[in-house]
Image (tube, rainbow, N blue to C red; front, side, top):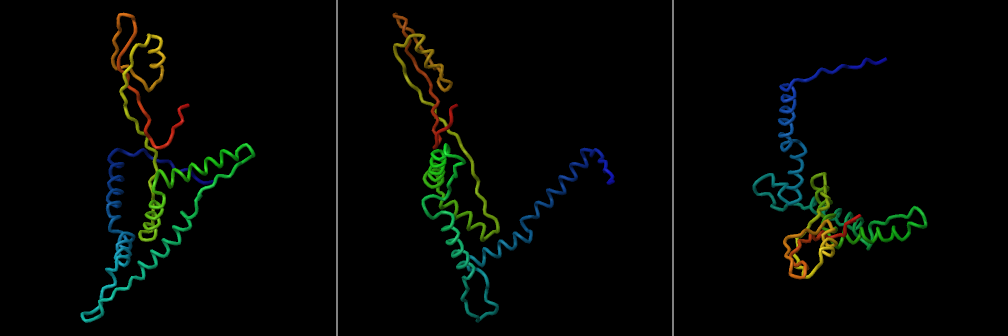
Length: 199
């Protein structure tokens, strides 16, 4: 039976020493072998290398790396972005057929119409071929705008119905001699590119 190793509680100074060591090691990442290799590949891609070995040699610099990266990039781009549908959701049952079709079309719309999907694929593939890693940051950003609207001659009940919406706030109101209200309300408008589920 294996013995269970008991761990001792670390003091604050020990934790700080471990963190400091890891920070020092991570700072050297820029000068690591991978970083040097990336710089070298970029220099070959940009035709800065190989340099002539001696004075008097030909100044011709082969662009084989550039040609290879660009041809591979074209082949990969065709794989990921050719055709009108690169994503297809498969229905799990007969009741899912329409929803799967809508989801497939919506995904294609968001990727290529609301966003620059082709440019995204091109950049990620290029970085992957040059730097060994291609990443894309994907996030959803909700945006809102405040819209001020005037209202006139509403009863208190009608105004209460308008204010029942959580995105509407009363800015100011005045009551006239008939007991009707006029004033200003603030509406929060959802301006993100896609509709949200309001529940």
